[in-house]
Each structure stands twice: as structure tokens, then as C-alpha cells.
Length: 88
Image (tube, rainbow, N blue to C red; front, side, top):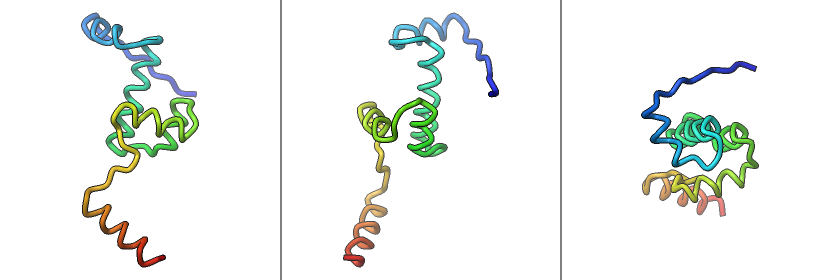
């Protein structure tokens, strides 16, 4: 297993500590995973795995944080809907 140590200055710790309801390193890891997911660098399945969650638990958690599971533009949604209609 590869590990990396991250050093945060006092200002970072002072900003993050009040937000963390658990260990600060666990909280920072979660922030990183959620941002990677939000930017589409990792899938929902991979993000769930990295956080030790079941996939549907992760989807519900991301949703509570305001990060949508389905992130399509209106045009993409219309195209997808049209495709489904042709299959029915």
C-alpha cells in the first residue's frame, strides 16, 4: 500500500477542524474523493470504494451534499430520453 503524508499549516487546520466530525485526515480524504467524483475524475463506484461505502449509500450521501448522481445537460437528457423511447 502506498501512502502519502500531507502537512497542513495551522491556518488550514483551524479552518478544517471545526468542519470535521471525525479525524481530520479522514475528513480531508473524503473532501478529496468527493471533489474527484464531482469533477468526473472517478466513478461513483470507485468513490464509494475509496470511502468504504456501498455504492447506493455513496449515491445517497453525495446527493445530501448536493452532488448529483445524474449530471446531464438538458440536451443530453433529451437525447437519452429520445433513445429510450425508440427502444420501447
